[in-house]
Amino acid sequence: MQSITSGAVPVKNLDPRSLAMDTEPSYRVRRATGTVVQVQAPARDILRVRVAVDGAPFMFAPGQHADVSFNGCVPRQYAMANRPGDPLLEFHVPCTPVAPDGFVATAPCDGALVRLLGPYGIAFRRRHAGEPMLLIAADSGLAAIKSILLSALADAGDDIGPIHLYHGVREACDLYDGDLLANAGGGVVHYVPTVLTPSIERVCRHGSLVQAIESDFPALAGFKVHLAGPRALVEECADTAVRLGAREEDLYAHPFDAPREGIATTPKAGGGGLLRAIFRG
Image (cartoon, rainbow, N blue to C red; front, side):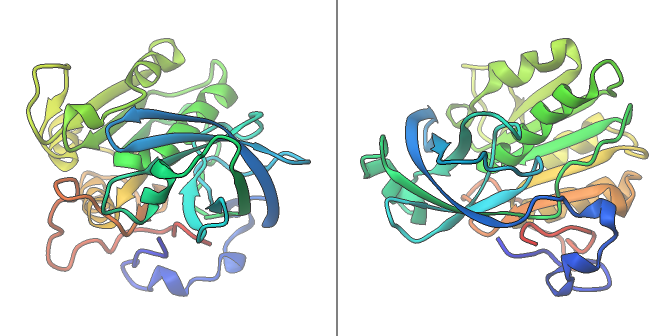
């Protein structure tokens, strides 16, 4: 979860402090502690972990993440899935047997001590009144996208453009928060769940996220595009968005380096070089 390369300059070499002021949030990185107050399993191998922070609220910009340690384990980076200012932090934690995060599924999470360091990341949501948004999430990448969506709906009021949210997973049982996403904004949000494996249990789009975007959007000029998920898929979706007319400066990427088999598509040779933002600042 370090960086993605840019077309001309490796993004990992960028210093966020050198960017224009409107690209950097005002929240300082700080340490905090908290307690796990709720653990749910909304999907087959995702845990929703809610944390009450001690002392002052842990402030962040929508789309940012933090280093999080549960019960003294090695810290890992998780995006906040809640709106900034909510009383509880929400994290979406993979718990597959092969994932390094698997300890969370077996540890006694309720009441567990949590240590936080953050927030990090410059691919957060900016306020752009009336402009359309395309939100693309794969697997637990939905956390960052959910925070971006909920904050956009809360901030925009009546001056909000259309929002298209695509959540791609391997099978229908991997989808979660569908009812919330589909009903958010009173019809402003167009929610498209996308699965690679056909299913008759739910109404889902069958195929890859790239195929869905190419099918639904003849052009993406003027869109603000946020992408979160395995690195290869984020790179390919970013290339696709630019090819459809989105400006490079309107792409905000939240990649991570642990793609699940069947989620990330095979990147094209020489592709994945069009991202302006890094996951960790």
